Amino acid sequence: MDGFDDATLWLVIPYFWGVSWTPPPGTVGLTCSYGLTNIRATVGQMLVGESTAHNHAFIVIDSERIVEAWPSGARISALADYAYDYVMYGWRLGLSAGQRDALAQAALSLHGIGYGLVDYLALSVSRMRLPWIGAMRRVASPHHLLPAQFVAAVYHRAQVELMPGEPDVTLAGLGDLWMTSRDWALHVPATHYA
Image 1: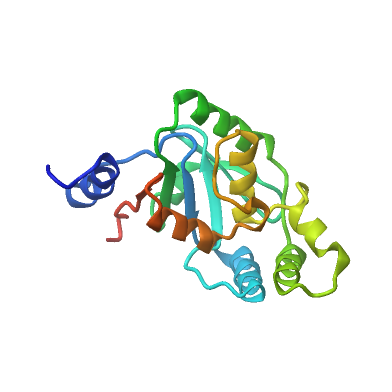
Image 2 (image 1 turned 30 degrees about the vertical axis):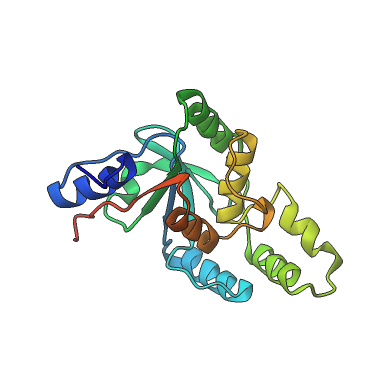
């Protein structure tokens, strides 16, 4: 198939033939949360000045489980919980089995670390360079990880390059990276609603 690479095939085949696809460990999922978490994330993204269809992120750790960023603390959930949701999956090309395992272990090591609206406010203040002395400290703190920061921290702990400026990474920035970089593969499977 001239003009198609492996990443393109991962994107095209499941959509047209309805093939069930399980993302490999280390894959990042971007999606939209629901309920109070969605409201909090939407307000937070407005504070940061970012508009994106995604306000939630997770890391696939095996064929059945994920670790997802969550306000009350990163938690282990079932991958099947997102089977009917729109999820944009991305992963760094050329990852070895050891790197994928390291990413899964790094995600598990962040279990319990959460975030709040104050973290979005701190990110907003630091971007606008307003005089809040603790803003940059809070943004860079490993004890408060917004969804995109959670992804960046996982990749950092696993010693796999994500992108420059990791403490200040955003979900929109991750989406842009996947769309423009040849180092990343993107997969948006058709849901049962499609």
